[in-house]
Image (cartoon, rainbow, N blue to C red; front, top):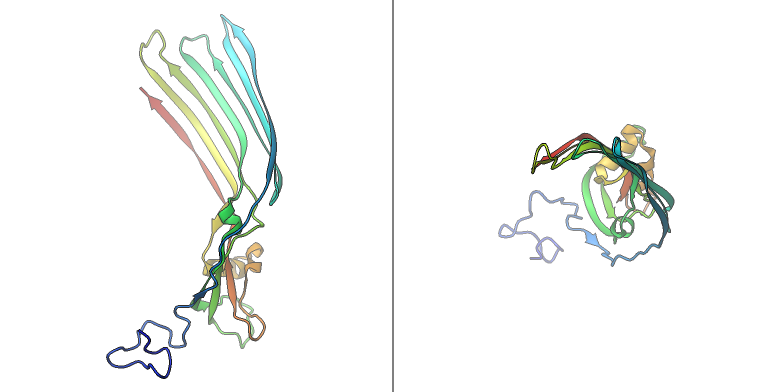
Length: 246
């Protein structure tokens, strides 16, 4: 209904104002939805070699696998990935040792780079700037702009796995098992924060890469805003063991 929208349709006892709404307005502000549009180009080349280097009745057989790839993204430039691994079928029947280490990447996708802008209003937003001017309010209403970030870089990972495989040896018919150790480290993980986290991390944690994403004291006639974007700001590390048997 339209009560409270104008002087001609005021709130009444039958249709009262919602007590949780901001009486100054801007409770339902959302506007200028746009269709998303963006593109990027990828050029790459790769080389992979599988090199058997041992075959002996007394020592077993072994091979080395190496690979390299160079990729150029029109949005983020050139990046290199590689892999080195090997296997050794030992003289012990059914026992194989294996290991591989690699440098891998994940490029940002179209949505992360070119997300269509969506604007909403956030009331009662806290301004944590410890050096704000005396006249600047501690809380304010901001425009929150969810947008893409064309400055994103690919995530980069280092992966290492090593283990042993038991595959139906004659001394244990029908039994198969594997035991592997893995270690994964990813840098520059693409992550998204909420608007308050972005501002807090800039002012309180001195993460300067986030400080350009907002302006809480714009020129007169311009609304304060925070741009919600994905950033390369996290890292992930995990390791452990993977065991299978049948």
